[in-house]
Image (cartoon, rainbow, N blue to C red; front, side, top):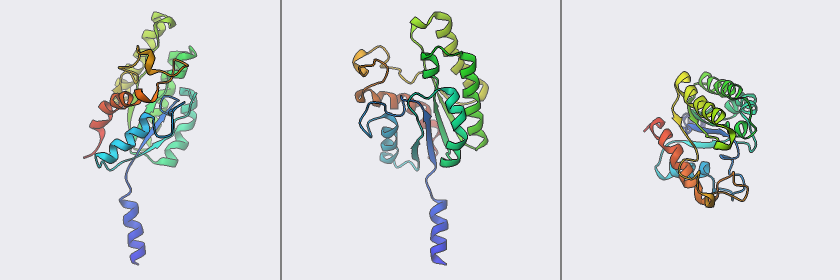
Length: 197
């Protein structure tokens, strides 16, 4: 009987999960294990004795369409309390239609909400060589989604490092380990108000 009670209590006290659902920028592409901003988030939560665990379901090269296909499975596996959605960069780099990206991200957000998770949307910006119209509509898609879906928005994951070449790997796309604390700070500003004390 005691074993049953302990098992029940242990399950009840399991820390809620923060699921990071993103692409290579969250999958720590090209970095040592544990150096990415998602791993740093886990460390910060432990240091602050916040009762959360972090699950990283990010996949390098993932697009919003791929994320929309994968989200239901990820939600069932992890049963998160919070989902951080960091997708769209690969859509932009490939010049895919912004309206399609927005629709896919909306589907991901709605799926997370149906599973009773709260959502933090992480935005991305495109460089000016993609053309003023595309760059503007890409940025606005994240702003509109946050308003329409009533979720908080981190406007730009790479805020503070975007124009610093030394903060990128040789491909000039993926941030180096030294840049990861800044990415964490950018996400943390949106995430911290969502955490239950």
